[in-house]
Image (tube, rainbow, N blue to C red; front, side, top):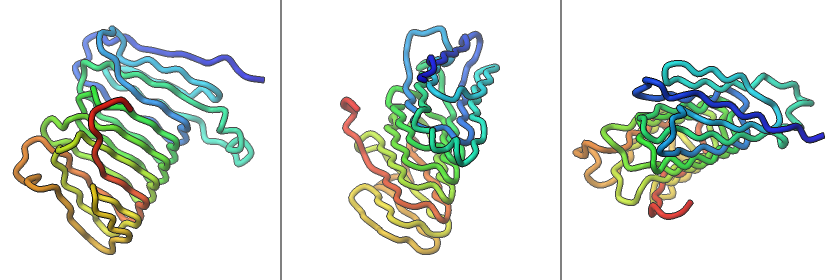
Length: 213
């Protein structure tokens, strides 16, 4: 029997910056932003309802740990999360998060992190404002990050990665430590700084044209 979707939200109040953390086990997640709202965030959940804590601009969404039998029913789980457009945000996608589609093009992004074991991640990034730090933990796989065309980016691979694409460069396996950068990125004050830990695989750092997703 299909359960009724559960919705939750929190008021913006006096928050001046936001932090969203999606802990382990989130699946089929859609993340967007909205302007002109008095809510810090709004979320709609289908299937398993996670625990949601919101205080002073910080939002934590934590799904319960599942048994192997329960994992077979995760196709019934989904979430749509909308963040307030007016705040700068830090985003943390924990280990085990899968099926994430994040359109962040209208958001001010401070930093974000993709945890180990996260998979099937697609992120449309905004123009960087200042130094935007990105961390991709070891064990993350099938991650596609697209920034606005021409946005500077540097990537540091700490101890090897496989199936890596950096703009038009298809690097396959990278053993050991490596540095990649777009022209002039070292001098750019507004840029993405990406740290890729060892064991990450099937990663793409590319561009989008700013049009419809």
